[in-house]
Image (cartoon, rainbow, N blue to C red; front, top):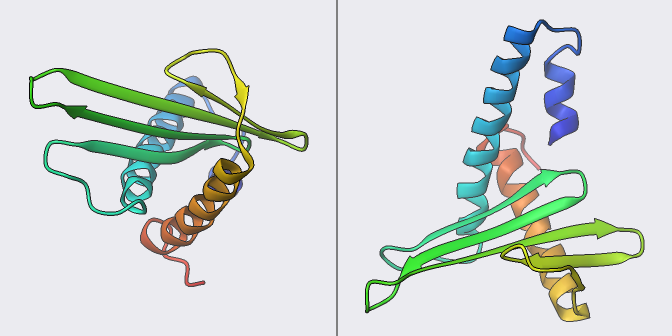
Length: 126
């Protein structure tokens, strides 16, 4: 999606324009993250889930909820995709290699995400 945004917005900008572009980029990411969070199904009440593409090689899945005791739980998983495989880090811990099944599920989620984003954010038909 970043390539599309780069085509829309010229690269020669002033600092003020760059600030506006960054704010726009962040707004797109927030919108995409909410849509991405819905591809995993309905959210239980009081739960927040985001799934989004941060850049060309990075995917983020983030979930927050409050348990029955009122304790807040946050799980944030970052996936770094490279030709050598997929590394993941949860809640800032060290990176480890994602399992084959997890990579398969990430691939399926990324495909659904891109289809939904094209349709719901950028109004492209598949």
